[in-house]
Structure formats: C-alpha cells, structure tokens
Length: 485
Image (tube, rainbow, N blue to C red; front, side):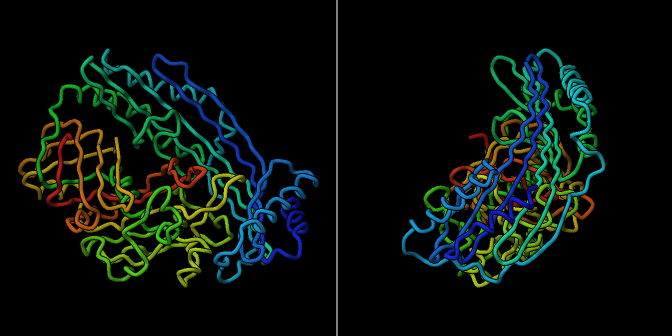
C-alpha cells in the first residue's frame, strides 16, 4: 500500500519537475504515564500521510497531505509544483550525486513494545512511583513515564531510489520533585530533561520493550526520591573558578549544545540565522579552528546498534554513516544533507531527517558522540585536589553563535583532596566553547562510554522534534567558572 502510493506520486509528477521525492509515513506513538497525586495519562496516536518535494526551474516546492486517494495525491503534487514555480529567481538547487538506492531496513528489537499489555506497563510505572514516595512527605511530585514510537515509511525519488524502513523506539524515565515550602529540588533517572514536559523523559533507544526493562526504574526510584529530598538541605554550589568533572549524562547536553547544533551544515550556511542564529564553525575554519584540547574527538554515527539516532537511510535516501566532526581538538566536518553538502563540495553525511510526513527534511544530529579517552571517573576524582562533580542537566542556555553558554545541573558533589564530599545544590557552570573545551584534560575510558537517547531536540520553523543519541563519557575541565547565579 505505502509503496504503491509512493510510486503513484512519482507517476503524477509533470515533465517540468527536474527532481522529485516522496515520503509516505505511518507513525504510531503510545505514551503511558503514572503520577504521585496526579491523574496520569494514557494515549495512543496514529497518523498516515505523504510529503512531496519537487524542483522546478531550479527551485524547491513542498506539500503534504493525509488524503491518500488519487484526487488527494494529484492535488498535493499540484501544490508542490505551484510552490516551486512561485519561488521566483534565486540560487538553483544542487543535490550533488544522485541517490539510486533500493533497499529495505528494519531496526532490531527483542520485544515489540506495542504487544506488551498496558496493564504491565502501568504496573511497572506505579511501582516506581510508590518507591519514590518512600523518601517521605517532602516528596511533592513524582512522574514516571514510557513512550513508544514506530515509523513505517517509504522513500522514493525520480533518480530511482526506493527504500522501505521500519523504526521502533522505546524509552522511559522518572522525575521526583521535593519541596519544603522554601525550596524545590528535583532528581531524575536515568536522564534529565532541561525543561518541564510531561512524558518523553528518561532514556530512549531504537529498540523494543527490553530497553525499558533494562533501565531499572523501580530499583532506582527510592534513591532518586531520597536524593531530591537531600538536596533541600544541601549547601549551594560556591561561586568560584575551579576544576569541573561532568558525568556522562550531563555531557550529553553539553556536547549537544557546544558541538551538535553548531556543526550542522545548514546552520553554518546561514539558513537558521533569522530563527536560531549562526555558528562559530564557519566553512573557512574547517581544518584550522581549535575546538578543544588535543584529546577531544567528536563524531556522528547513525550506524550504532540500538542508539536512538540510528537508522538505515535518512529521509533523502542516503545511507547511515559515521562522520568525523572534531579530530584531535580541531574542527573538521559537518553533519549535512544533500543540498548543504553540495554547497560545500562534499557528499551528504546522511543527516537529513523530517519530523513526520508533513515536514521537510532538515539537517539533524544522529548519534553525536565524544570519543572516549584513557582515564576514568574514579581516576579523575582522585587526581583533583579541589573541584566539583556534577550530574544531570537541569537548565541550558547558549548564545546564537554557540559560544557563550551556561548549564545548570540537578546535583553536584564537592571534591576535596581527591575524594567526593558534600552534596551541593543549584550548581551551574559557564564557559566560552573553545576556551572551555581547551581545558579538557581527561576523558573516561571505553568501559564508561554509553549512548544516551534524547527524543526532544527542537529545530526549524515550523518546529520539528528529532530523536537523537549522544555517546559520552565523564570528562574533566580545568579553570571553570561555577556558581549559583
């Protein structure tokens, strides 16, 4: 059915179309949520539609519809062609080498999450909430949630490509808020979200229900609740310039903001200036701009098994691949789609993805990763006379060139004479991207490297949400400005 629709759309394209592609997508999303003193939530959503891109007279046109009848498909092609013709004169679209792949790809999973009874999912979440409540009356709110996504999609273009894919994604998480009338603190597991949203919390993977079971929500919930309560009476993080050690979980958002968005090629070419800003990583700086110390290596890899940013082919039919972005501390490359890569004289890195059938593919992070080093968290702490160790991102702010940034964390620990000491609350740290990363003098080893799945990366206008992964390790940075303000 979906393949037939894609082929029908290509057959409706007029001769004036010099390039065209079609994406047919059926998306399923289920959310299950349990709350302390709350109503909880249960939702199941399905959506099917088609998006059509065309190039006419060197200009793009795009249209989408959920009407999959012959009349609906004819109408959506007409709108896409009319939009391209209305674009007027401008730089002509160049997509580089043609994409002619014909393939099928399905993400691996052990247990289909959509076959697991909702009652079983609710039982697990309710148990996690009850465990968190054992931290006492200062626990004010607990939220435990699961989300499951399935995308069945077909991509076809006028160059001969025809690709069928099925992606299944699963995730879950827990957040606990504690309050004493004067202060509110929170703790999350296994991954924090730096803003208030319901659902889509925790850690996600391109996998089945087995991933949810591996997260140990029930087993960790009592500790998470106790941590939130303990933060209420903890001292504030001191205002000082000191040594900072970040956890792998906190590193995910740090890497996301300092290396992910600024190394997206469309942003570097100025297409986001009016909305999200520019980047320090301009094309003329490739190969010469020092991003960080020589031990810092950053890459994107959409082929990592089970990672949330993994797939077989992007939404332009380009195969998933690994791309080197920062090598030995020097900025080397970009995440790109076909058009942005052609402008740079390169091949696409396979990073063009769309949030649904009704959206255009944009350059998005896949699995943005920090190469591990040869140290460990234990060794970093032992080698630090005075500093702070922080975990879980609570807030994030960065300027429009991705240089000056500020991150707030859920929790910190004082380091004195090579040992972790007092619990600290309201820890923040600030920096200027290349100066901050130049101070990186130690990275955790391969055994501490893991991929964190984050289903809430925002970009574009209209807004699109991408599901991405971040492979990280703990890291140490020297001479970092920390404080509470």
